[in-house]
Structures are given as structure tokens and as C-alpha cells.
Amino acid sequence: MDLARYAVVFAIALAVTAAMTPLARRLALRMGLVDVPNPRRINKVPMPTGGGMAIFAGFLAAALVGGIPHFGITVLSAFLILLLGMLDDRYELSAGVKFAGQFAAVLFYVLFGPRIEFMSNPFGEMLYVGKLSIPLTMLWVLTLVNIMNFIDGIDGLTTGITLIGAVALTTLALLLGRLDAAVLAVIVVGVSLGFLPYNFNPARVYLGDGGAMLLGFLLAAISTEGALKGAATIGISVPILILAVPVTDLLCAVVRRFQQGVPIYQADRSHFHHRLLDLGFTQRQVVYVAYLITGFSATMAILTAHLSRTTWIVAVVLGLIFIYGSMRVGMIRPLHEWNKGDTKDV
Image (cartoon, rainbow, N blue to C red; front, top):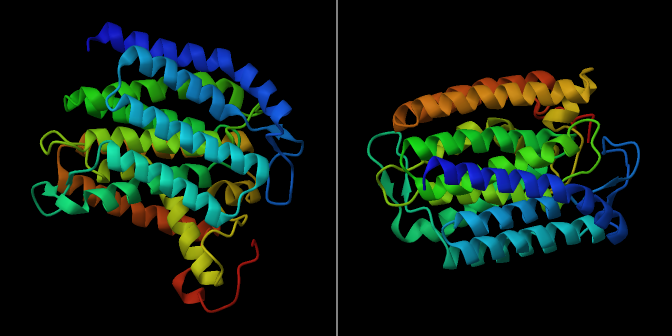
């Protein structure tokens, strides 16, 4: 695929998403897909949550033209993820039902679509995972689906992080000659950029669980397509480094709920964006900080992607820095305070 075709695919994804977003907003209101304010929410008025429909429309239109690999499986799995999220937005599914739906959609994708066959090895050459490819790929896709949903709590945060991450993955895929992954990455850049003006503060429409999980799935699909065939792979350490903000937020959420002795799926108000808002940051300042961190970590991922060991070292070092910062802003308690009772922000 030449540069002109990449440009066409990008333009279609951007234009269709931008054109469909106002319609998706109206449909969301008619369908009852509305985020009602509550003590854990940032919004003060009810907001339509139909952004995922516009993103899927842009993705589908561009995919039809661009000819993405595993077209049928990827499109159908993406639709199932979107549908599940929309049902959750409308009916507030239980955590068990929601995870079961995610598991079924991702299992379908992994059984009939691409799988992660090689992993980057911090101690040497790429590792062939063999029979572990199915559970490993499922774990990876489910993780990205959920971390992008977890971080989606403030105007433009998830969409902007996805945009930056997709730009980085596009760059890497092109540098490594992974044109199949590059096509999908370009599409994700387009849909994110097409939706962001409507989603940036003050937002006119939200992603909803459907849109946030869909973006997480598409990012996972890019990295899964890019981790095939051994040579010239995009190792798992690379997208982990690119998505440092949501990955750190997820790890802190797990630790925080372990510290508090509550189920991992129990919602709280101590995520990255909550803590910065409590410290006096505005919504725009929070997303600018997140964009800056993501841009920095994505740049480091691109610079070190061809050096597996270096990428892992950078990821671990930055991870330790981010965990320290998370303790400083109150996302988790320091180790010496673990046994001093619950945090105040549950």
C-alpha cells in the first residue's frame, strides 16, 4: 500500500467519524444512552454516550476501502465489543455479565483471527509462545479493552491518548514494514482525530463504554497484527510503554482495591484524572498532562523499539517513576501505610 492509499484511508476514517458524530449524539439521546451525573462522575448534566457508533462507522468505512487483514473477524468482533458497551451504557450490566460478554467477543476474535505468536524478550531474541498464543492474546486484548474503559472519565482523555498511541503505532509499523498493522493504525488515527473535537472539553458527546472499549480493542488489534511472524514484530513492551498512563492507572486501581479489601471491579474516585482534579487541575489541564506523558512515553517506545532489552528497561524505569508519582498524588498508598485503614476517596 502506497502513501496515497494511506492518506485516503485516513481521510475516510476522519471524515466519516466527524460527519457521523452529530447523528450518533442524537441517536444516543433517543436510545437512552445518557451518562447521568452521580458523585463519581465529572459531568454536571446528563451527556449522550453514543460516540462509539460514530467511531465504528468511520472504522468500517475506512476498513472497507483499506482492506484490513482479517477483515470479517476484526469488524464483527469490534461490533460485538461496541454492542456490549452500549448495552452496559443503557442497562448498567453487572460486572460478571459485562466481563462474560467481553470474554466471548475476544475469544471469537482470537480463535478465528490473529494471535500473538512472538513476544519481545528482555534477555535476548524474540520468544515463540506456541500453544500459549491463545490465552496470551486473550489476556492482552481484554486488558487493553478494559484499561481504555477505566481511564475514560474526563472529556477527551481516552480519545486523545488513543490518537497519540495510534500515531506511534503507525510510525513503528511503517518503520518495521508491518503494513498490515499500519493500515489499521492509520484508521484508528483517523477515527480518533475525527471524534476528538466533539469529545474535548467541553464535550458534546461521550465515548460511553461502547466507544472506550472499542478504541481499546482496536489498539489491541493493531499490536496483535504487529506481533506476528517473528521478525519485524511490535513487541508487547512497546504498546505497554506507549500507553503508560492507562496502564499505570489500571495497575494502581488493582493495588488500591487490594489495599482496601474490595473487589477489583468496584468503582471508585481515585483514578489518575480524579486525583489531579482534586489537586486543583482543570479538566483541560489534566488531559494536557496525560497527552504530554503519553507523547513522551510513545517517543521513547519508538526510539527503543528495535532494542527489545532497552525497551523493557525504559518501560520498567518509567513504570517505577509513574508508580512513585501515583503514590504522591494519592492514587495508591505507600507500602508503609497499607495497614492503616481505607483511603478517603472510595
